[in-house]
Image 1 (tube, helix red, strand yellow):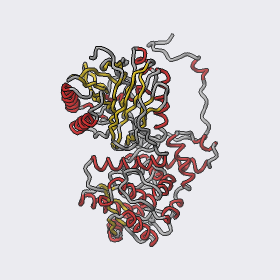
Image 2 (image 1 turned 45 degrees about the vertical axis):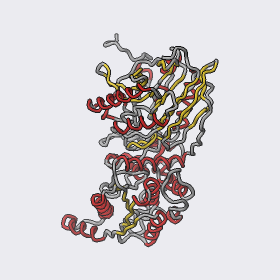
Image 3 (image 1 turned 30 degrees about the vertical axis):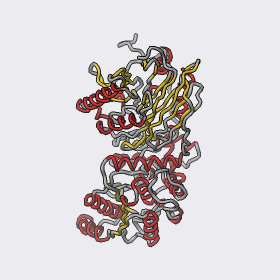
Image 4 (image 1 turned 180 degrees about the vertical axis):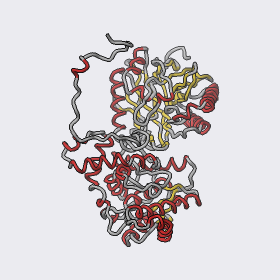
Length: 578
């Protein structure tokens, strides 16, 4: 330790993209960042960086815990020859308990450890399932500077930061694994401003970047000074290592002004999240490319554009799978999308496959009328062909169902739901239209697709149809999307009672019908491919309903609690009440 406190510090933000389980690869990223920020005194990495976040139940494996600790020990030894110290997130076992920890590596040693206190257990998070709660964190003494290290969720409530301030903390360094959802960027900033205001301490917020299964972490790390002014804002969706410069002043530490990247508005961010999530899912799982059914409709057109933006045209293959109900308009629109994106485009008719299935089933269907069963055979023939192409060439099948379809069950199991990943799974149909129009005039930084119009205007303006029967339109089976999506958003994201939705002006019959479809489709969603989380509540990790479920909202106003039955007494801990 220095004999006297330092008056200047260089603290690097390592906004990086780890891979869950790739301990050696993540450690290599730590070393590369340390080399890049060789002029820094200290480097802050995101939450659980050495393991990758979120590790879920992988973190319970003793072999994985041991690998993470060994990597941390190796990195600690490497700090013995001078150079920047590091704060690296890692699982840590102590006294038989597993913690979400941050290790300070300095001077050839693990100089300090801090454990996460507030373990989130809502939405996509299950940390109480795997980690023990740590003690309230006091600051660590780093070269004469008392640094507080609240870990991610620890700043969403006041207590950990207050504890750090009350025990002499001077700077808050916050490692995060905070995934994207709409509105979360503003929420993070609001929470951070609250902690700065309460503690009167500056705060450095480091977030990871990249996709992990359904989750996407957009980075967007930042620094707030003690007056809550923004000193540094890093870009979203980019790996970067940026050194910030700090000065001790009479009233505390101040970060000198650094880069202030502009963050995109919601629609652009939503599109970029879908692209990054798809790119990392394909690349981190080792697929050489992707294949999709290109129908001439808007969903598959947008997915194709996202695929090219994520992976480049040479890694995307589109297949038109026509049947007798496929219109000439759909042929033309699908070909136009493929041409605009510059991707390989094949036509594989499904008539012989459908007729073969119908012939095989004819003896057991004898005397029965044609119905949705025969329509579904078309989707299942298409799904089988796409999966055969995937098996033969190694490419992953992208599914193309939007959230409106996933909500209402307007999709065919083992047909158009076949595939490995769905980049638009959490986008409602109206949002698909909006992002398609957006992509025609803009693309994200780093996107590999062409500029300009890639989705023909006719696809955006024509009525949506699955083309499973003559003159079929989606609105034969569903309410208009502009109404349907508003109802679904209230049912899914907000969990509003049916009575409240009706009171807001929606038709009672439509609302109850949509609610019924939502409930009946749960078994389909349980078998759907993973897809990027965009909204507050995506299907999958953070909306887990039972498949077998007899409860139905009756649509009447909710009954008021009868408080007279409890005699105004609070719950007790005694075994018996007298």
